[in-house]
Length: 133
Image 1 (cartoon, rainbow, N blue to C red):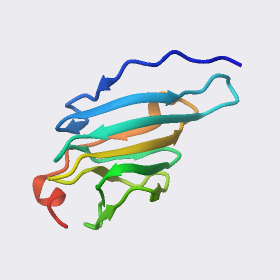
Image 2 (cartoon, rainbow, N blue to C red):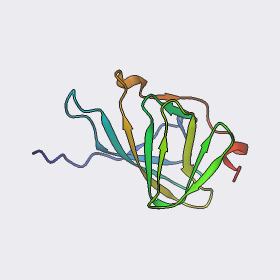
Image 3 (cartoon, rainbow, N blue to C red):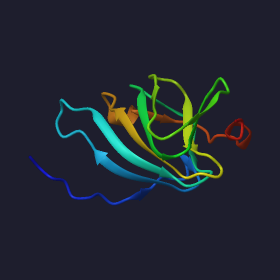
Image 4 (cartoon, rainbow, N blue to C red):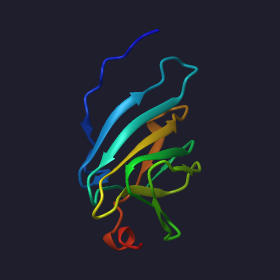
């Protein structure tokens, strides 16, 4: 058994996020047989990801606040604490806080064979798409 030190909180890059978004890494692969990555991500009001997809899909578990999650078909869903959203491999989507509420979620992603291709980042979410609900 090994107890890991508390990692530093990282502010996510403006190229991939709008607003203030902070990440705490919880778990990363510790051997070649492991692929899961788990992170706690906190979004201040109005903050959100850019459009993106994941090679092996993603699970998001909302722990605090109110989340909005959108897909390319124009749907924007409100997700409350305790709910988990599963995003299939390759589905372009975004997620973030509402304009008036902080949001925190756990992000669970399985690395691709080449970890650099796990997430494909695209353009920022337009305000019109974000304010759709």
